[in-house]
Image (cartoon, rainbow, N blue to C red):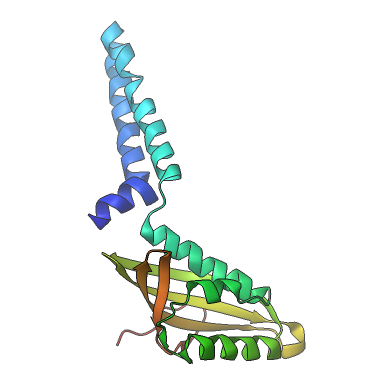
Length: 187
């Protein structure tokens, strides 16, 4: 089911390629006989492709919602705000940093000490199963020039739960320091 959602709503590239091949085949048939039936058939793949584009644009999957939330948290943290983190951390959060209030306090203190030029989320792998999800991400933090610049990579594993208000972070494992551009080692 997740594969079908991914192909239809998140990345319909393969379906669009299949429709392009079908369009070429129908065009070849039309060139050979120039029948009205083949001419009408030429309309079907573009109409289906338009519908597929509209479907992908209108439907936001759970995986996409989590991607958006993680990017919003990173953008806000870069801008010295923690509203998104406070919103997406579940009230029952326990994990890296302690509970929700403790983690937000640590984030506030850490952010105040280090001027950040940019934060990029370079790898997002989200696996959704029912009302639970696991996100494995890598972030690259570029510090300001007064801190020596440079990029520092961190691999994160976050457990999500779907509540009535939306997806919330239930647990975060302690981040691992990684070399930017390389996948973290498998355990």
